[in-house]
Image (cartoon, rainbow, N blue to C red; front, side):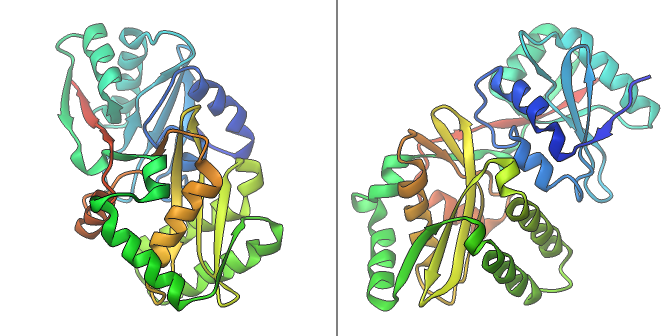
Length: 296
């Protein structure tokens, strides 16, 4: 009998081994992302036919699985029917989320006529050239430069790496921000994810940046390497009472933490209009397309 387990910090080495086996560009395939959201999404895993199979269920929606991960060439014709049977035993169809184009093609080749895919625009990842996020050159970034210039003229600031000395202030800042919207379930879930990331930043091996304005923490961000040439930003929080705070923490984090990589993945917009506008305003160099697959 196959038993799915809840993920724990001690599982990081196992997950990282599977993530390192191939070059992934989608933001879901980091242990950090899965771990910090494991409670609201009920993230679980099992090893099936040498594949790392990860499932999730959010609120009252149907459960789903991520694309099974292999250490070598994936044998989807073996693992997906087993996964489908497990879902069927629970009374649900097998739905696969965050399937990238290359994995979609491999699955269709392995199981012709057994999978139907639909593009999931709301979950496409935005990928940027790190150099552009740092330099903000040209007409397309003029508004960003204006925000930064206004910020520099208005405030005294200092950028710091996240460390044990400023960790508690980041936690207190997040708690204060979340309390302003207390009662919103999504905000509570996000607060929990942020607390998980900050409290376990060393074990998760993430890199963080902290922005002090007039001496107090008013912005922070967390990310890590997604593959050797791409970083992913998991969390970015800033106090919008300080005009330009998001723009400056974005630029500083790209410069101080990720200048050695070509690309930065800033994750998806979740179909939120304001978030989509903000992410598009930074002129992504490419999108990581994702699909939802239905096993039939």
